[in-house]
Image 1 (cartoon, rainbow, N blue to C red):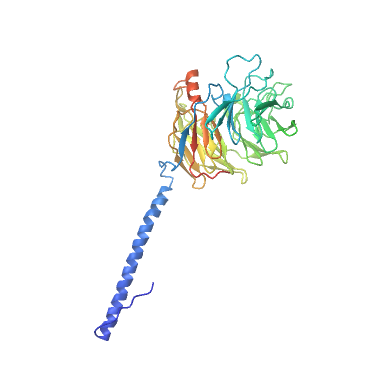
Image 2: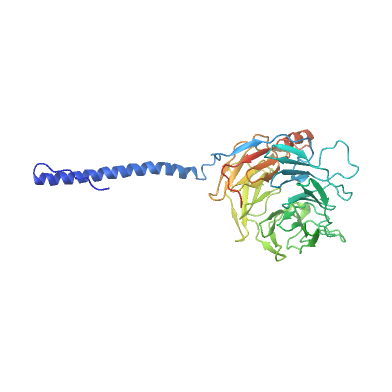
Length: 442
């Protein structure tokens, strides 16, 4: 900005002095203005920086919202992932019972499966799956292939549900001895095959556990199975499994001592090379039992909790593994109550944790109703708004592309007891969490 020159008056010397005086005054005014502008600009910037500091954990995520789902029909499929499965088909949430009823099918029983359409807000019952005399009560897992929901049982032949045709079909039996004794099958869809690995498989001849487990891959296009190579892992149950887009990651679990010891190692399976490679031990040691995990598109995040000698939950821990660098890192502490059996889901651009159970004492439990979201870009957590439904342990969870749905789960009260009524009450109340301005993908 140019200096404004006023015409001198009086003597020439006086004119020069006044000119110098004006220039000094103008400079001082300009400096003052710049200082005021700088201070005015610095205040909101400083506030913004403070708003993004980890020491401000009490600020809720702005713009996010909850929606309570309509009550589904009477059912038995919503009690929790150990007793059922949930998958997102791109249009519907499909909930499946723990196992299909074998003949004779009882009259008046609840449906084996339900589907919920968020666009219409309506539920529908799925048709009865084909009965199988060889299927027994036990764990099962489900996965969406883009065309069908494939349901794999601990024993018996898998079945597949086609939402467009609203029909089931029975698939080929897996290879004998490879997943026939699966304790907790967790099928993974690679885009071409369904991978199934089980670390607690039992040898049919000796009746002993097999180190490295057994696994198989199913191709829906050919209706054929192939055997997976033995992994470098010791036998275990409850291992964390995730698909990265290129590899199947298998980490931690319960090893030896009838499952009382925690594993720290892991391995990655590459279907293209048909090989396993070891994964470094988990950062900070083994995870606590009943950990939760989610793939973010670049890292596998494992959520766990620590307990003291009195079996009281005293802290949350979250570790992230990057397959590209083969390194672990520890996430900052989340500003929520310690809990296990929580739901963990990647919501497009942030990680959400909700629900769970807290060990108040060895024989007393609580169900925290708070939750938190983690933003990898800022490496910070923020609390979620309170959900419109009661909390519960291990809710079934899916990400639809614009909302995270939590439904089912277990709430047995503050004491160890099997109160079927309270389970049903919790199971029938689902909710969807809508992150504001979420960028899908990852």
